[in-house]
Length: 96
Image 1 (cartoon, rainbow, N blue to C red):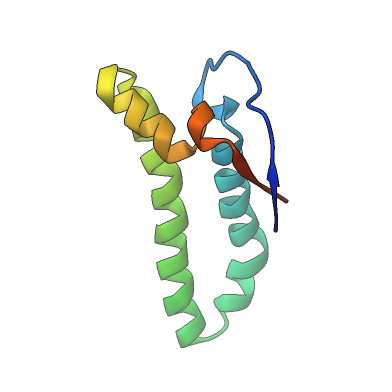
Image 2: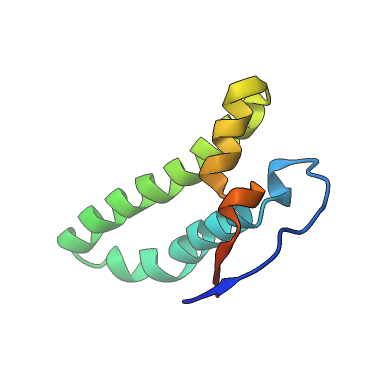
């Protein structure tokens, strides 16, 4: 990962899918299901680790979805701060 400075893009947010961080979380979840899970399921330790990882990845997406659905006052501001989309939080970004 490379850290770089970038300006905030101005765009309208119509759904949770408009957040890059949510798209990355979903992609990570899907990659885990498709690539890592089949390998980890071959042993007891792997299945244990896979269960923990699966719950964690699912929780990340679910928490973002729940936060987005609130859309009111302080709650949405806190949610956006967590997602690092407010201008004061976007000075340093992570590039893939």
